[in-house]
Length: 80
Image 1 (cartoon, rainbow, N blue to C red):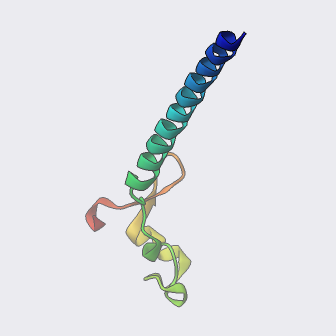
Image 2 (image 1 turned 135 degrees about the vertical axis):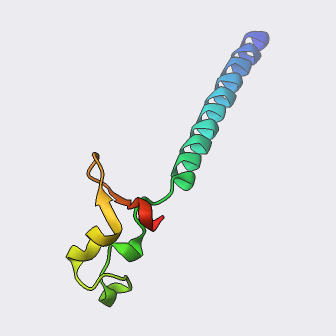
């Protein structure tokens, strides 16, 4: 009986280590995606001068950014 219990513990410990490894790898991949993806249109081009941006009116965003097919603001090529 003692051998059987220790064998079960080894199986459980290896599954815990495997699960922990998968969680660590997933966290690394997600953090890499989040932190390496640049902001398409910087905040200063999306807010008015009262809020710390460069826009005189909210409609001036079209001077600096354009909408892409995913309905996201992207910095115009001549501003890059």
